[in-house]
Image 1 (spheres, rainbow over the protein chains, first blue to last red):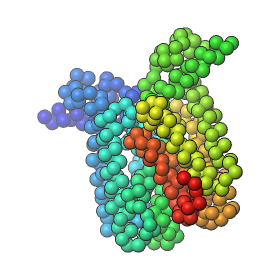
Image 2 (cartoon, rainbow over the protein chains, first blue to last red):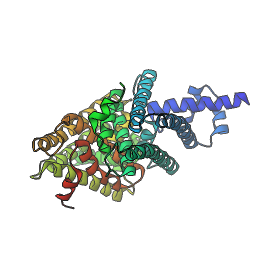
Image 3 (cartoon, rainbow over the protein chains, first blue to last red):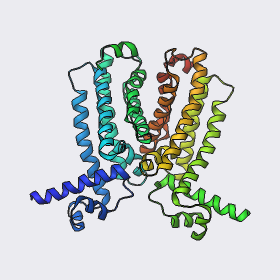
Image 4 (tube, rainbow over the protein chains, first blue to last red):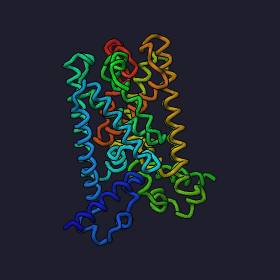
Length: 208
Length: 208
């Protein structure tokens, strides 16, 4: 039992690293099993197909990321500061990924959205749900800032949350293309601009 | 001579369609030649490798897109309106792509940036140059709006142009993921927010 679930974990871990480094299409089951150090025969004991594995990798990554987002966005801090903390945490994730892989790996969800969404309907649907959940987490914090009068009264909160997630994906794309996690530093002022929040005051009361 | 260049064009056209639909990695030279209706042997007469073909597809697409961007952004219209025209033109490109392919194909450069930039240094470098050129084209128009006092005086124009292109890539990602070119409708108000331009006045004097 211990050994069995160990093999599954090894496959998942190897698959995630390889997908982050080289995408989904380039990989074969044999290569994933070789990297995981498990016999190829055991793959289909755990996963129906390579696509089923991709969905599991996506789900496990979202479980981790949602936990991080929920923790950061739920802190006992002013709402706009929590958004800033999220951007800093995202930049750190990309820096650590760069150290581990030699290159910025970007966002697993964004990568797979562009690579696979037109080819695999179940991947598309799962990624839609995940981006919707991200937008909802951001929107809750935007609503708190709105209640406190810290953002423009006229802002459509759901739309603003969607714009922030779109900006984050675009900035992570630049971070990957330029192999430079510093591309995410602009997220904070971009977010304030998208929310119609006064940039200087907000800057002044935030810790560096 | 006519026949020879015809074969090259057919390969390029087929490759672009296939790359837009399924990405670069999934394709083989044989499949591209079959789709182009040219003998496989002729491929290496025109292209040194599949990667060399990808660079040529990128360059030809940028030649077309740069022409469109230059035309739209150079019109005799107020600068912010020209940015709006660019977003409308981009949305139209995605709608036409959706009609032709059945699905929104997204941005060829963004797709390949996420798929290939960590695996092919020449693709990475060419895409960096193209995004820099896009940012520069936007920045020129932002500078005009700045001179006319139509955007916030404090805006860093280069940084704002980069943020607009990042937002555009993020919005195109959503358009592809949701198979919905309408995701680009928000670009105009997102752009005004990023530039610190007053949203309502700008909305009022723009044609629908």
